[in-house]
Image (cartoon, rainbow, N blue to C red; front, side, top):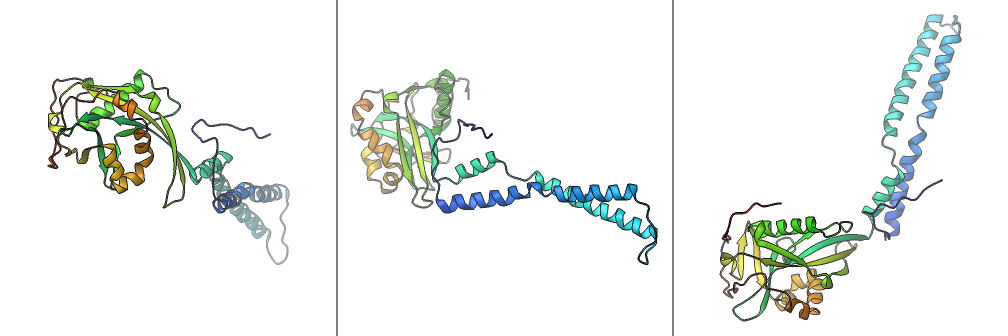
Length: 294
């Protein structure tokens, strides 16, 4: 009897195109049908071995007894090679678990879970801006983020990992980074890729970041750090940027709809962001030496 085993890492619902599913099942059936290929050579080998042990070879059909004995020995050797090959290929026969994994991998729905860092500061024009980075592949700006495991509760250990991620992003001391979960902002969305036509389900958790040190060298509106381009942008500016709006509209619109919650959170830094478009390589000032727990 087949028993269902629910892997917590697998989605509960899978959507997959018919032709893709048909191809996966066809390949699985073809490979699974070879699981019994070892039976024929084993049966022949046993028959030949039995014949060799109990038979009294005699001269027949113009062949001497020794030649008949040699033919049986060579036949047993050939069957042994055939059986060895069949047993070796048996290791490659797919299992039901591997079929499920292939279906999930080719499914039209995928899961992405991300912790988003809201690093905000006031600017010279008295507007709230967020620190984002530019993705050179998508040519769009995104909030700093890291993936998370939905099966892990965001406890103190998880928050320490988030603090270490922010410290690594900005090159600051771990002890100078604090994060707090904005649970009321957490949301879920879904998108369909224009290129692959695959639907991705996103789960976002939002974290407010407060820096306990000055970041004077990061006050420019645009700067580079560790080879990554960063920028302080308003939500309106992100929405006006075509590629950013195309790739990140769900998050931007969600934050627009929760401006009151955002306004009630502390600024990540007391520094005022300069509006000038000058770009430079930023080297954050470390106010104190601390141990990075990452």
